[in-house]
Structures are given as C-alpha cells and as structure tokens.
Length: 408
Ligand SMILES: Cc1ncc(COP(=O)(O)O)c(C=O)c1O
Image (cartoon, rainbow, N blue to C red):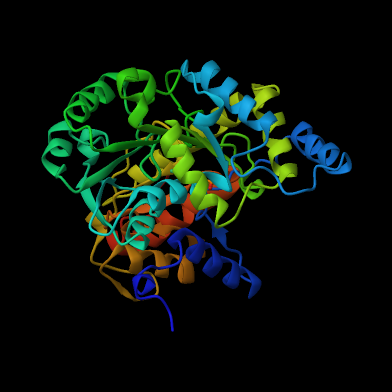
C-alpha cells in the first residue's frame, strides 16, 4: 500500500551512513564520522539569543507561508549585499531548509516526463526529488580534470523539448568545485536560446570559498535571465545552523507563487523562532563566517593532501565547501586489512567503517562511483586521526610499502 514512485527512492545516503556510524559508536567503538555536511561549530550565541527573545515575545504562532516580513527583508538585503541582486518581496520564499526550497521548486514545475539536467557529481536531492515528481534526471558527468565543471556544449546537447531545469551547484557538494563567472557566462549563452528551461543556482556554500573572493551566481552574471533563475541559499552551512531548518530563495514571482502552493499544502511556514534566528544571522556580525571559512579551507587542504599521498588515490584540493572527494578507483579491487575483497566505493566505505571505524560516504551516492566523500567539518584532531586510519587501511592493499607518512 505504498506509492509506486517511491519504490526506488532511498533515504538520503549521507544520513544512512551517519546512522551506521552512530550505531557502531553506540556499540562502544571509537568511530570518526565524516558523513554529514554539518558544521562542527556551534550556532553563534547572538543567533540563539534572538530565537529566545522571539519565543518569549510570543512569536510562537502559525507564520506566513512564504516567511516573516523580517526574514524576507533580511534575505532581500543579503541578496543585495552579497550578489547585487534585487528581489521584490513577492520574489522571495523561506522554507524548511534549502532542501524544502528545492523540493517546492521541482514539485511546483515538473510534470511526468519532464527532464532535469543534473551535473555529476551532485547532491542527491536533485535527482531523487525529480524522480519523486515522476520526472527524469539527465546526468552530465563532470571530470576532475575539468575542475568538475559542466561543459556548456554538453549542456546544450542535453537540452530537449522536455527539459524543465538545469541545476547548478557551486561551490559543489561533494566535489568542492567553484564555477568562475566566465564559465557561468558561457553556460548563460546556451540557456539564452532555450527559454523553456528554468535554472536553479544552489548557492548553499556561497560563503565557503577557500581561495579568491565572492561567489559568482547566475542571476548576477546573466541578469537578462533572472526571470528564469531560482537562486537558492540558506543559513545551515554559513552560520552553523543545520538544525534550525531555514533556507530561502529569490526568483520570479510566478515561480515563487507556485512554490508557495506546494509549501502551503505540505509544511506551511517555517517556525517563527527559527526565522528570528535566521534574521539575526543574516543581519548580524559576519566575522564568524570568515573564521569558519578559514578553518574549513585549512582542514580541507590538509585532508586532500593526505588522501593524495596515498598510493592509488588521487585527490585535488577542493576550492570551496567543506568536503574532499578523493578518487579511490586506483585502489580497486583491493583486499581490506580484514581480508575482505573490495570492488566498489560502497564496499570500500562499508569495510572502512567496520574495520577502521571511519565513516565516509560512497561516491555512488553523488553519481560518481570510484570516489568517496569525506566531510571536513570535523575537528582537526579527528581529521588527522581519520586520515591516519584511512592511510593504514589502504596500505594493506599497496602491500608492504611501509607506513605512509601523511602529516610529515
Ligand atoms: C548543495 C546543497 N544544497 C542544499 C542543501 C540543503 O541544506 P538545508 O536544507 O540544511 O538548508 C544541502 C545540504 O547538505 C546541500 O549540500
């Protein structure tokens, strides 16, 4: 008695991997979990205080579907400040995390048979929500050698009369790729001749760019396409607020109105207490963001170098977000230290967890087999120990070369 379209929709792979890590830890093992895309920093105190004040002041009633006036104004100001983008009040929506924003957008626009172009590797909500809407994800593989960027010509070749969305996510989860404005401009040229296609710019990690300055976003690079672009972001990653569940987007009023219908019939508006917290985060001091960014950048560089030093593993330093995405295909097939034959990234992650007690997520969950994703949103000590354990685990395969020194 379950819906047929749910039959091959899994739970989010990252959450499954995190649950397995937790179960092993609860059984008494010293597990290092690098599974979730979750900042290890606490939510800033001024944000928590704002939520407390809001609750005491009685902001505990049903909120408007699209967001409180205060948060919509803060989001408008944020778009102006960071990207020079002007959105009117009816061009902004607040959801239960950017995840719901993406769900709203796809469910509001997809009919059965529609296609959504998803560059690979991807955050797995894009293809899975597409399939939940009885539409078809069309995958475009992006090579590490191309900095994990989609080729504009390949986007052009993938567009059909059925295409409804092109999804762009930079900095990228899981690759950490950052898309230069010039490359976005080349993609915009393609999109100009296909006016039936929406563009989703998922900028969740916009403030977590390790090198260089501001994030380039499509609506700013190609203002003439702005009425077909949904610019998505949220407070989860930037302000260490994953549990508050507040995301937002700017887009054309007709799309926002359709998304509002989906949200209105599903969750309704976001908790006003959480929205008050998000207002404090967006309008408050931003120096905390720079501190977290610097920490993620340093950790990601160290972990990427440690992975790259393992024979059979290739790993470029990511340019943004807080993940590293090593290519382990050169190790496979391999025999784990415990004597298990490993032929895939999924088997590698399973054995890494049970034998070395390090939890990572298989690349297959992001559409790219032969890779694993490690979150660097963990303490430097935990990351150093995880790298040591991974190197030892892989060393069993490279047979008797002696211990691999990863931290000099
Ligand atoms: C690329 C990307 N977009 C959106 C989200 C959703 O974040 P949230 O729902 O916490 O706002 C995530 C979370 O992992 C993500 O990685």
